[in-house]
Length: 346
Image (cartoon, rainbow, N blue to C red):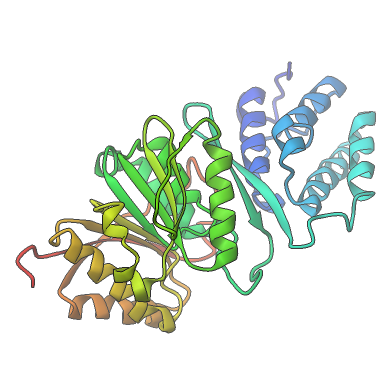
């Protein structure tokens, strides 16, 4: 049991829970608020900290990036040295053990992150730490995905029980979160790059291990899982040829979502083809929720102008502060839009 310390800004058990949450999802070390947890930590408390982080059974089975774990322990050791606090033997043993594994990580740069959700649920994602891996940026979770999850948490009524299609799902954070937290009737997670689709399929199967697999004769559907609350599918979907995908036989979306898919002019026309197809399929009755990291204001504005020209209506939504998902809200501007079209548009 952690002892109360005058330097701690909250109950020690709550501080530990927050540190664990940040560690599991790989929050940069310099962005973790320790709330004084390390300022007067004793041996038993150090052991508990290790058990909930680097020795966590989830981390042992599905390890975080090795370099991140080393940096985490190095920060603790450095802080305890500065405070003249005796370090637990296991702290050094674990640190040295991780250092000895240097160079033994997955050659493709894959590791795992774990996102703790409300209700004691967890999303575990396999992803790549490389900015560009195997020729794609889709093998890691991006800021706009986390912001979209936060937005969804505050607008559950718009997603609960609905048919949802996600474009550019990447490793699946937003889609898997919706499948777990919103109980959609059906949700289809889609992407196009073969490595991304393969990793996306693995992540869906990892997070719904008890789901019943459903057979389908559509070769573009890579997995179809009935988890009891929702049907979850992974689909290989080329936006330019969405009309040939037979997706209409799988789902008629009430909601279309996408996060960090508007960053390259070369993608705009294929994306607009896909959006137009889905809206036509639903007689313009669906809604598109788009979350973007505004890296270049002109690039984003160009795409929004394309939507306006195509008779879409755009409403900018308020971006929620990080609560369940951690991201650096000061690093880049996140913008979220709800996009609809007049039902009479032909």
